Length: 468
Image (cartoon, rainbow, N blue to C red):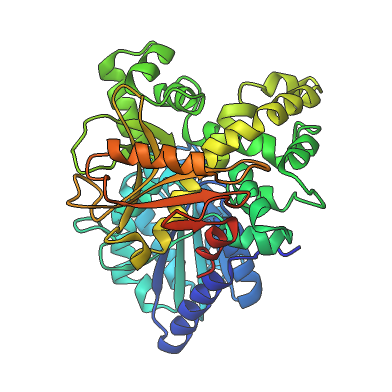
């Protein structure tokens, strides 16, 4: 099983940048951002293996002080295959400017320098960003070096190249997303249904997906993983939380509450016991800075102030819902008990968990004449909770002029989308502001027993949306 399925495009992009460095003899910077455990380091390590050029790979440490980070960087260069290694032996630098100048002077031919966990380095020493700009403009850019900057803090990494920041206009950006359902279908050699459901549990994280062997069901895969307290399905979630949200951080408590099912502000407040001010600040960190939560509003022709929070990553949604509260059972060797509980709840939970993936699948195909003027996909719920619609397509993400479609997702094992489901959808559409004349869309795991839907989508249709 290939470790790099779905990463061919990114490897080609890095190879093209390296080719340009070779031809021009000038340096280039590329930033790569992606969620923790999505495979950024593995991608770059494979790139270095295939290119076989002199390189140094430095990974910043969490909580390290500036002097310690510089010492570690120097040690990595001294132990590397770069020509600079000779000049960095037994040397201590008091500034980043001095270290980077020495690094540049030792580069003689096409080379790669990798800085992993850049956000940790910037938290330890914000001056690194300005020092890197100075070193790049004066020295490094004149040498044939590809500088690769990696980071999992999506908010911080996305700001690096913005106007007013030291690296503005100097770096190419790459975003490394998790493997798509289509990638998983190829990697695991499974049906569209199983590929989509595997995504609900693995989140498309390569390290977890690679653990899939001959499993013919998600619950079978989960049961096997829970037999081992060190399996990726178990430990990746804890490592993500420990790296981004250390114990004692209020945002961690808020994330655990949302992952446990508290999606509205009032319910999160009740679950965590935080004041409204503290909760609002934590939610801003999780949505705007960390981008681990998504703040959703009902999509309809009427503006709404109601907000529900969703964990962005599919694997983390699963981990927070099931594994985090059951970790004690796994650690004492009773993962089978937790697996039994997950198996019992799996049919109902996947019906809810598949909805964000369905919305993402539909959004990838818009615009599409079948869905009217829709350009954005969301959902709708009333303040009282008596009306809930899985899918709403509209021309704008907020207060749209038109609702192009409303839809229902029925992800049942053996029961098709029925005429009764259609009647319920039509009645719900009447309650969506602007949805009375919208197209009716049905999504079903197990086929359809009615032909009166405007659009009927199967698992094969959803998977096809991820082919490009």
